[in-house]
Amino acid sequence: TDQGNNNNNNNNTKQERGSMDLAKIPKQVTQTLHVCATHKKPKKLMITLRKIRPHNNNDNNPRNKSLCLVFFGRIKTLQYVSKLLQKERDLPSQQQLHSHLSQTEREQILQNFRSGKTRILLATDLAARGVHIP
Image 1 (tube, helix red, strand yellow):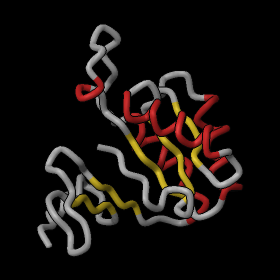
Image 2 (cartoon, rainbow, N blue to C red):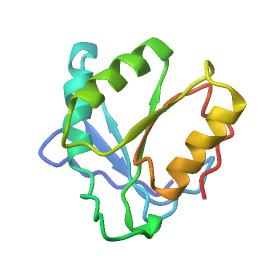
Image 3 (cartoon, helix red, strand yellow):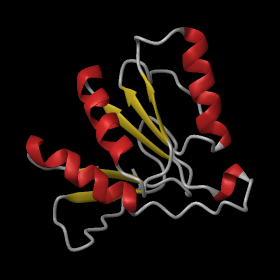
Image 4 (cartoon, helix red, strand yellow):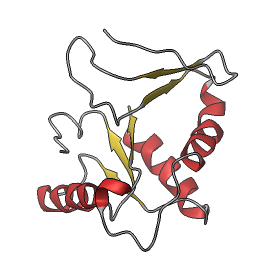
Protein backbone atom coordinates (compact mmCIF):
# COMPACT_ATOMS: atom_id res chain seq x y z
CA THR A 1 0.00 0.00 0.00
CA ASP A 2 1.33 3.41 -1.00
CA GLN A 3 -0.08 5.77 1.61
CA GLY A 4 0.97 9.29 2.40
CA ASN A 5 -0.25 11.07 5.49
CA ASN A 6 -1.11 14.70 5.06
CA ASN A 7 -2.25 16.07 8.38
CA ASN A 8 -2.97 19.65 7.24
CA ASN A 9 -2.75 20.75 10.90
CA ASN A 10 -5.47 18.24 11.74
CA ASN A 11 -4.48 14.92 13.26
CA ASN A 12 -7.69 13.18 12.27
CA THR A 13 -7.47 13.78 8.52
CA LYS A 14 -5.81 11.16 6.34
CA GLN A 15 -5.15 11.43 2.63
CA GLU A 16 -4.03 8.55 0.44
CA ARG A 17 -2.53 8.59 -3.02
CA GLY A 18 -1.39 5.74 -5.19
CA SER A 19 -2.53 2.14 -4.98
CA MET A 20 -4.29 0.21 -2.25
CA ASP A 21 -4.41 -3.53 -1.71
CA LEU A 22 -7.76 -4.06 -3.46
CA ALA A 23 -7.91 -1.26 -6.02
CA LYS A 24 -5.63 0.99 -7.97
CA ILE A 25 -6.28 4.67 -7.46
CA PRO A 26 -5.04 7.07 -10.14
CA LYS A 27 -2.44 9.59 -9.02
CA GLN A 28 -4.80 12.51 -9.76
CA VAL A 29 -7.33 11.13 -7.24
CA THR A 30 -7.09 12.11 -3.60
CA GLN A 31 -9.01 10.16 -0.99
CA THR A 32 -9.70 11.97 2.24
CA LEU A 33 -11.02 10.43 5.43
CA HIS A 34 -12.20 12.65 8.27
CA VAL A 35 -12.83 11.04 11.64
CA CYS A 36 -15.08 13.15 13.85
CA ALA A 37 -18.16 13.06 16.05
CA THR A 38 -21.43 12.46 14.21
CA HIS A 39 -22.83 15.91 15.00
CA LYS A 40 -19.74 17.56 13.45
CA LYS A 41 -19.84 15.68 10.13
CA PRO A 42 -22.08 18.07 8.13
CA LYS A 43 -19.96 21.11 8.97
CA LYS A 44 -16.74 19.20 8.28
CA LEU A 45 -18.11 18.08 4.90
CA MET A 46 -19.04 21.66 3.93
CA ILE A 47 -15.51 22.85 4.78
CA THR A 48 -13.99 20.03 2.72
CA LEU A 49 -16.25 20.67 -0.28
CA ARG A 50 -15.32 24.36 -0.31
CA LYS A 51 -11.68 23.34 -0.74
CA ILE A 52 -12.41 21.68 -4.09
CA ARG A 53 -10.66 23.46 -6.94
CA PRO A 54 -12.92 26.23 -8.27
CA HIS A 55 -14.85 25.52 -11.44
CA ASN A 56 -13.74 27.37 -14.54
CA ASN A 57 -16.95 28.25 -16.42
CA ASN A 58 -15.03 28.79 -19.68
CA ASP A 59 -13.48 25.32 -19.63
CA ASN A 60 -15.72 22.57 -21.03
CA ASN A 61 -13.13 19.82 -20.58
CA PRO A 62 -14.43 17.54 -17.78
CA ARG A 63 -10.87 16.46 -17.00
CA ASN A 64 -10.10 19.99 -15.79
CA LYS A 65 -12.98 20.01 -13.30
CA SER A 66 -12.67 18.76 -9.74
CA LEU A 67 -15.21 16.08 -8.91
CA CYS A 68 -16.17 14.81 -5.47
CA LEU A 69 -17.83 11.52 -4.57
CA VAL A 70 -19.22 11.26 -1.03
CA PHE A 71 -20.49 7.93 0.34
CA PHE A 72 -23.22 7.54 2.96
CA GLY A 73 -24.41 4.54 4.92
CA ARG A 74 -28.07 5.61 4.90
CA ILE A 75 -30.34 7.32 2.35
CA LYS A 76 -31.84 9.48 5.11
CA THR A 77 -28.40 10.91 5.94
CA LEU A 78 -27.62 11.44 2.24
CA GLN A 79 -30.88 13.36 1.76
CA TYR A 80 -30.23 15.51 4.84
CA VAL A 81 -26.78 16.49 3.57
CA SER A 82 -28.18 17.11 0.09
CA LYS A 83 -30.63 19.64 1.55
CA LEU A 84 -27.76 21.35 3.39
CA LEU A 85 -25.75 21.56 0.16
CA GLN A 86 -28.70 23.04 -1.75
CA LYS A 87 -28.74 25.95 0.71
CA GLU A 88 -25.08 26.74 0.03
CA ARG A 89 -24.74 29.08 -2.96
CA ASP A 90 -20.95 28.83 -3.25
CA LEU A 91 -20.81 25.05 -3.75
CA PRO A 92 -20.90 23.32 -7.14
CA SER A 93 -23.83 21.28 -8.44
CA GLN A 94 -24.68 18.03 -6.68
CA GLN A 95 -26.88 14.99 -7.27
CA GLN A 96 -27.94 11.93 -5.29
CA LEU A 97 -27.34 8.28 -6.22
CA HIS A 98 -29.30 5.72 -4.18
CA SER A 99 -31.54 2.69 -4.45
CA HIS A 100 -34.81 4.66 -4.51
CA LEU A 101 -34.01 5.86 -8.04
CA SER A 102 -34.85 4.02 -11.24
CA GLN A 103 -32.03 2.49 -13.28
CA THR A 104 -32.54 5.15 -15.95
CA GLU A 105 -32.21 7.93 -13.37
CA ARG A 106 -29.05 6.34 -11.94
CA GLU A 107 -27.47 6.08 -15.38
CA GLN A 108 -28.27 9.72 -16.15
CA ILE A 109 -26.82 10.87 -12.83
CA LEU A 110 -23.62 8.89 -13.47
CA GLN A 111 -23.37 10.36 -16.97
CA ASN A 112 -23.74 13.87 -15.52
CA PHE A 113 -20.95 13.12 -13.03
CA ARG A 114 -18.63 11.60 -15.66
CA SER A 115 -19.12 14.61 -17.94
CA GLY A 116 -18.50 17.11 -15.13
CA LYS A 117 -22.01 18.56 -15.32
CA THR A 118 -22.52 17.36 -11.75
CA ARG A 119 -19.44 18.00 -9.63
CA ILE A 120 -20.55 16.48 -6.31
CA LEU A 121 -22.10 13.01 -6.25
CA LEU A 122 -23.73 11.90 -3.01
CA ALA A 123 -24.13 8.12 -3.04
CA THR A 124 -25.16 5.41 -0.66
CA ASP A 125 -22.51 2.74 -0.37
CA LEU A 126 -24.94 0.07 -1.67
CA ALA A 127 -25.95 2.10 -4.75
CA ALA A 128 -22.31 2.80 -5.52
CA ARG A 129 -21.15 -0.81 -5.62
CA GLY A 130 -19.80 -1.61 -9.02
CA VAL A 131 -19.93 1.99 -10.22
CA HIS A 132 -17.15 2.59 -12.74
CA ILE A 133 -16.27 6.18 -13.53
CA PRO A 134 -13.36 6.35 -16.01
